[in-house]
Image (cartoon, rainbow, N blue to C red; front, side):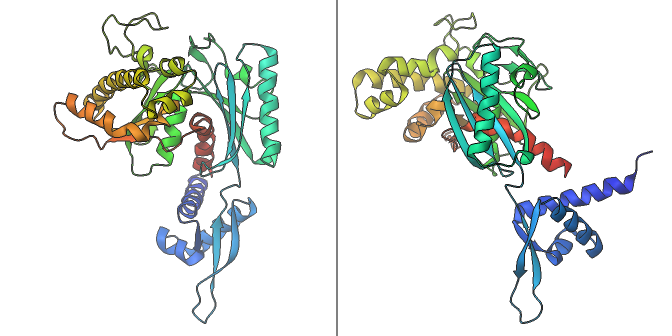
Length: 371
């Protein structure tokens, strides 16, 4: 039979911990008042959190001339999650604290391959990150790996991985030389998750990742909506030009074929160089960019009509989009049947490391819910 007293105790401790996380520092009396709990209950749970080194007693609050109340403070770096962003030619590794703040980042050039050597490299990269960040290994909750593929609901297997040709690859293999729990997460899901966490005024959103490949993710109530078969939000393979350019997926006219980074970088040698030439007004780049925005506006308008939610533009191109957001909005407004504004359209706040940071967050969430 389930011990209900244990559940209530855990529930109250979780409430106290999350309140301290939100407010950063409170007195015992503040917690009693705000959560309507008894003083002994609060005292007992604070002592437990102090013993676990998740909070600290940081002095006193108030200056009333009498006995000041003790302050209890949330420690954001009491634990850490590690996230990796695996692409065809690079791996980015980050350590994040319990608030999702990046503590340390390493980016390494390494071509992906399904080999013992590559998986050993990932293990060594994680250890290097831990040393560089000066992390106690006991603080590490786990390693999330963002990958350009569709991943099963248990985060253990890639069931569609054409981009890296790694369909069937597993978290067990990726984590063979990683000494912590390891999961896989779709790269767009990871990036969108990191954006949602630093944008508290958003509850429902569609995240578009405009990078080497195009991905998407739907968030309903700040949770990923994966669909019935983990295939939701594959915006990169929505048709924007019927029978248009060929896509790697085997179809024609996909958004991927018109709005991937390659479309821009191949015209100028690199993505930064493209935007430099665009700012300089080079006619060829201006024309390419106009076509890019035009195709992107078709996809964004369709998303808005289907989901009626905020839309966040992220990825490598998203990092440059602030200067061109008004142009894109004008195109979208011209297509929309019901709205004369597009304030729902946002540019990502994470300009880099969004995938790696987001990949670490499931371990942070799991920890916060189990306190």
